[in-house]
Length: 116
Image (cartoon, rainbow, N blue to C red):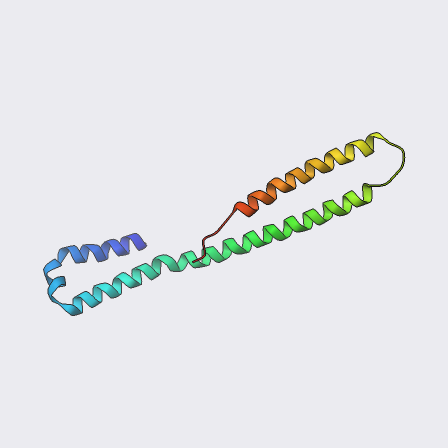
């Protein structure tokens, strides 16, 4: 829609170049339409930017809760006693979860949104 609008402004400018150069009121009107077109282009991007920031903060919060659960589970499983298969498997599974958590955290941290 914005491209069509700005294309229309450009078309009017190209159809009446001599009138544009001689009439200051026409220049003001064209400048006004140009400014309105630029505002119409950036206004929807602002709301989209806010939604993306909210989604990122929600994902970071969920990742923090996941880390706390993993930490609590690891503390519950750690204990002294005889060595068993479960005690060998649990740290390996926990390391895999931590690596998956680290990968997810890095992906989330790499998501950056330009501030408008």
